[in-house]
Length: 333
Ligand code: ACO
Image (tube, rainbow, N blue to C red; front, side, top):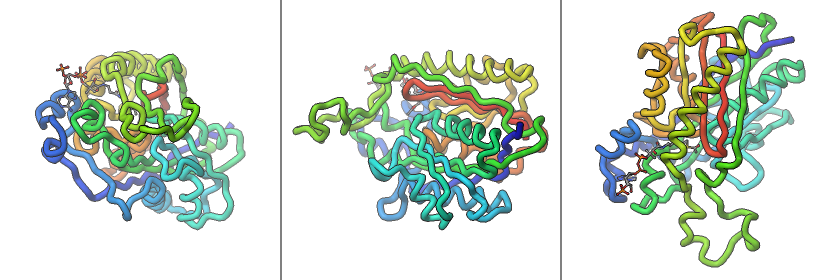
């Protein structure tokens, strides 16, 4: 059976930098609180009229395609992961197909929040393994800033999120010792209300109900932060071990751990638990906050730019988020 290999990675970040100090003027918060609890120093916010979820994904995709030494015409299929689409429907996958000028290839939209990119990668990997497609573009892109409650009422969530996009090109690989070795996907819907945005939605008799715009617990993200934190730590550990065990590796075999950037404290806890040295983990939440489905491909693109990815390196990707959903992917470059 074929394997799939990442042959290019790219990312795009909106130009507007929003520091913790900037947020202090919008709500009762402090640079100290945000840094201490989350590690975040600044994030990017999209500019209306310039950035959309789809066009940020397209910009990241163009870079990934160029780094793969390809053109958009080489792409057989598109997978787009986001929780913040431009339209309620259709999803942004088709917009990317139009913006890249690719003929009528399929475009699939994935909505698994922070785990969305790894879920998308896994779907793409299955298509390549079965021989259905040879070259697949996998994108994660988010504009959170447009839907956050940037007042004191929403501060427990809104200080954590930022906007951005990342993309990779996956290609069929004959050498089965290389590429994506395995992916592992999980969910626990029992916790679907713990981190969510509910409205507008069909859980109400009338989707757009009177007073909806003032109903901030429905239209802005709500989160039980401590419950999410505790579950994240447990599930990350489990899904990383699952990927190592499935392939007969130990944590010391890893060259890099790329963990979804939800909170620097979670990433540091995992690093300590796995006893990994600093050079084997990569965190960028300090600069971008939590960019949900975009986080992991942004990191892959930054590592690509810095030429830190070496042939034969063993990479662990892991994510946890709303749903709850969690996932891992083990990659041999
Ligand atoms: N500024 C100042 N004070 C604040 C802020 C803020 N931005 N936000 C909350 N506070 C206050 C609270 O009101 C509370 O005050 P009180 O003690 O007077 O009641 C106090 O700070 C402590 O609040 P907690 O929520 O208990 O703070 P905690 O230490 O749990 O940190 C945090 C909160 C950072 C959200 C943490 O719980 C966390 O990171 N959780 C995990 C997040 C995560 O992993 N999300 C998953 C991915 S997201 C996705 O999938 C879309």
